[in-house]
Amino acid sequence: MKSPDIIFETLEVGPLAVNCYIIGSKTDNTAAVIDAGGNVKEIVNILKKRNLTLKYIINTHAHFDHVGGVSELHDLTGAPFLLHKEDSPLLDFLNEQSDFFGLPSIPKPIINKHLIDNEEIALGDDAIRIIHTPGHSPGCVCFLLNDTVFTGDTLFAGSIGRTDLYGGSIDTLINSVKTRLFTLEDKVLVYPGHGPVTTIGQEKKHNPFF
Image 1 (cartoon, rainbow, N blue to C red):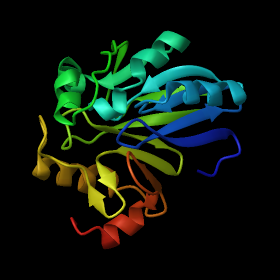
Image 2 (cartoon, helix red, strand yellow):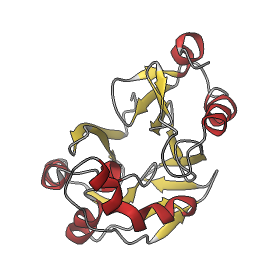
Image 3 (tube, rainbow, N blue to C red):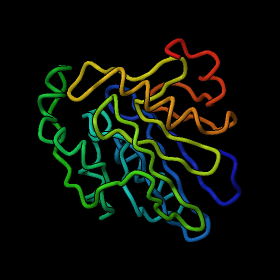
Image 4 (cartoon, rainbow, N blue to C red):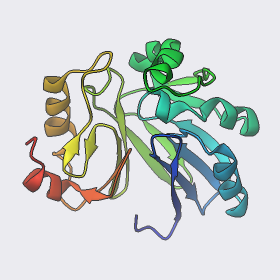
């Protein structure tokens, strides 16, 4: 991400190596954390090191590996948790999700506000736009900030998210990517929920699913 007013940190968290993103504003020292799947102490340490106050805990979706640290992070910071309403039911089955992978249960976070398609949430002088991209789950969203989109498990470098879990649909996911993400400029950087960074242009040309 190239912006003189943005502080940006990436770390892999939780047992399934989720990409967690910390975005901070140099204007007012507020921050948003995307997909706090674990390693909460490490997240909090980065916030303190960067002198940032957490304003939002926002999630691309509600699968257990992406929300594993949300409840603890909320308790430590008081920051509200924001999630699309169509993924709310997934929070009632977190233990079933983690059991499926043979992993310990995680605390259920409380949603403080629902994310709405095309709304913008302010971060300093910038704004993060919500893009609803169902398919991996019913309430999957992506977050667009300037020249960067955070795609969660909707779009990866050379791949897409799985669709064999609750509410998944391959046709819906393909349509979401084509109509909501591939309409962005080719130069837009793609920061996915797992794996390396790519660009919209790269995926339009070389992703085998398209």
